[in-house]
Length: 227
Image (cartoon, rainbow, N blue to C red; front, side, top):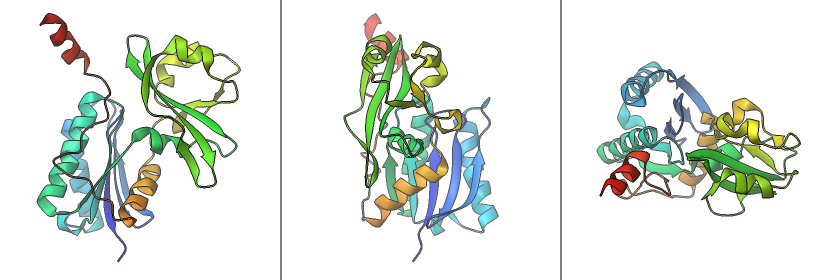
């Protein structure tokens, strides 16, 4: 049976909601960048289901990006995915956002760094290397001062990710940079990773899946300092 999947990407604005049947995207809606994911996600999913003639119970799996990214966006997307999985019994599959972005790098890239803004002059960064199976993680996700990382990044390493919106002007001019439309995850990338995980039988626990943060939010850090 070809699985029907709901895809939720809310790690960055604008978010994306999509439906897929097997490897085919059957509906996709990009949320308005000026509005909050909390207001648009559920209506967007409802509209796509109606357009496809599907009911929530027809969805065999929900695939959601887990970060790093927007604290609020990730919480909204993951909680929505967990709720659907709990209510309908469908599979829940959390996909690391940087892994999805890494799939979108140009074919001639052999080494890749995916970055996102971690505030205070720091970045989330993870490196990938090309193998016969595609781009695979070469190290763990970490948080580093941008200046320290950029000073040691080899020139042959391609750079991508939403962090370029902030840090592109500070990159060395000789650094290889992926096309701007590929800095954030596409629904097709989320689908490819989610479908592969679904077909292996992997299922994430709705009570255990959490956003990939590595650090507290700015509000949490401020609260800790006050205490």
